[in-house]
Length: 318
Ligand code: AMP
Ligand code: MG
Image: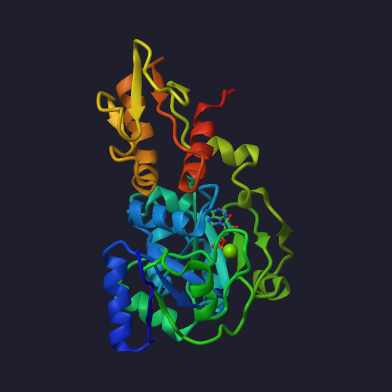
């Protein structure tokens, strides 16, 4: 992808941005907190591209951005607490982690296969207009390479991601500059990340104190790990050839006779987008007490996130 288009926040610019997003491309856009790196939250490929562009070493769950609370209710289960917080703080810098509703069409990469989903309705007029023009949910982590400072201007986005994303809508400087406050509501209300809305304001609406720093924000916590999909079959990694009886998942040239392939050409973005689904498919083919072997994946770029997920799938289970 040679050039990142800088788009104006007018009708023509937003319609171009929406077209790119519909084509599965990535477009950064301003929110009131920081610039978000938007991709279609229903597309495995678009979400894999987000991880690729940011250089994320792990499939962490992403926040889904929506134009209004009605669109959010389709994806998450709103209890009374969620309704009250949405009414008080949306649109605005508040993210709610809610039980994921069934059959939402969201990519499992957005939730990292968790039974919860993080939802936000941003207040920035350009973000709202883009969400309406696009007409669907946008996964949007901060638009910076992993490990770097979050961008609050289009120029910062270009500095970090030029040539790695299709476009950026230039809406000037972000007003809040810190990330959204994240509240977990899949149990007792918990402050998962402090941010743009003060915890005290949230406690005032809820009428009671928040629990601090719940474990749901760390997908490596034991409870969390258990909810990742683990194949029933035994998984063997870096398998250049299958052993008899194994279902072999190939990657790249040289694996033409594999049962399934993450990417015939060795494309890591394609492999990432196929990964979750192929693990399930291989598990089905392997059957009860079956065995899965997976070809080596290079430990570079998106390969690190793929290998991280594969190591979890291969880890001994209780
Ligand atoms: P960001 O990179 O700014 O988009 O931050 C996303 C944050 O939301 C991360 O800290 C995630 O761990 C958290 N998050 C997103 N989805 C979930 C979820 N389903 N459950 C718990 N935390 C979540
Ligand atoms: Mg970030």
